[in-house]
Image (cartoon, rainbow, N blue to C red; front, top):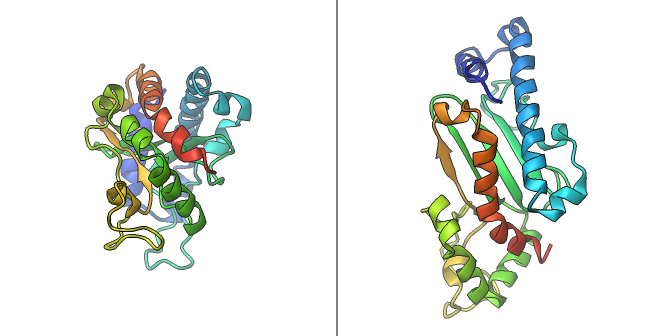
Length: 222
């Protein structure tokens, strides 16, 4: 379970994003990280009950959590730490190209969750576009399902957009709107009170169940 202490740590890290402060508050980070591991373990159990690909993967919770240390080599922002925790659950671990389910934990209403494939490499994106174009009726049916629309009123979101049809596709393609997407994901925000509630993991699992058909569709050509 995520407690308020984790959100307080992240909020303080935002205003003290330097190594000296982090080292002085290492125990707070370790407590927060432990809570995220616990949440991830619970999510893996919940999701494995309805997604056989996750059940068969035997994932270690730690393999699903992104490092808090930023790679600043090519960034103007030299802040050494991320100010959130990010968990990504998919069939082969967070570094694989398969789509999956995610939760971003941050203070002051910055927590959100959903599923899909965010900013895939060009080869993967080509596979996804071909799958959507070739099975557009099925894709549209998935996105219009009541459970999906209830959890994600905004529908599927793009991680970037093309201005013109991608190479190899005509402007008359019925799926053109989605073929211009550079990624496919869903998103729903949570209040701090929801994040720290005892039922948060169950709420996330229900959210993931609603987006599973979309995740399965996107993973099919991969």
